[in-house]
Image 1: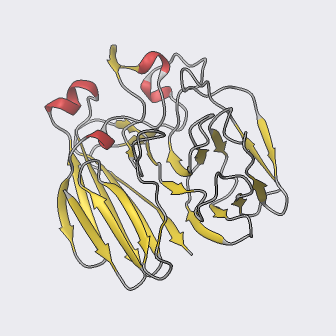
Image 2: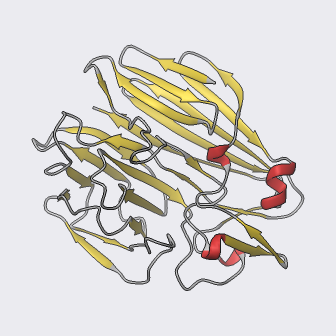
Length: 292
């Protein structure tokens, strides 16, 4: 079911399926900011990644002597979420563990996803509660896709990514077939904290950026006008657009978790960036998207 949040600046549409934000429309500029989910390139707009971020070795994981199959980015994005509450400027959804989830992910949980509209910003809030009696292991991440180009140009060439406070970006690529993290360290040089997008910029890989290198990433048009900024406090984040497709959008993805490294063959609790939540505890995090 679709829901709407609205103020004098923005109109935001959300879907209870996946608790996914589907549209951010500016009343002041008469412009849409989010990708429309055209399956020609990518059929989603801003899925929530839970309880895994990225791909798994052989599309499975191992825990307590059992092997569980799991697709990329977990299952929350492909499930109906219940509406908890809504007012004029905020909305909360909830996904509870059930027989279906426990068969492939053996942890009882409550996942609550909230959206708050504040002037020209959308705050996204996550609450993960361990409702079971033993430790729970999980990842959670965001995957919002922003239109780029935004002024009707033929492609993204000349647009810029802004990385606050950085002279270069150190990142890992991923294996395009398996979706796993490669060991090599790659360097993206910046000029005045910015990288200019070229036609081949997204041909090779997802940019997985670890180590808390920055907490602010923006997109600017070829004239240097910033039209979206994402603020976060995550251990890593990703920049992605479909490889080699010249897709008219790009994603800025704050992550608490990551795909398996290409040589990883350990247990669930040994995965890099995996979060551990004790019985009865709640994990609360957020990030913010600001539209200019």
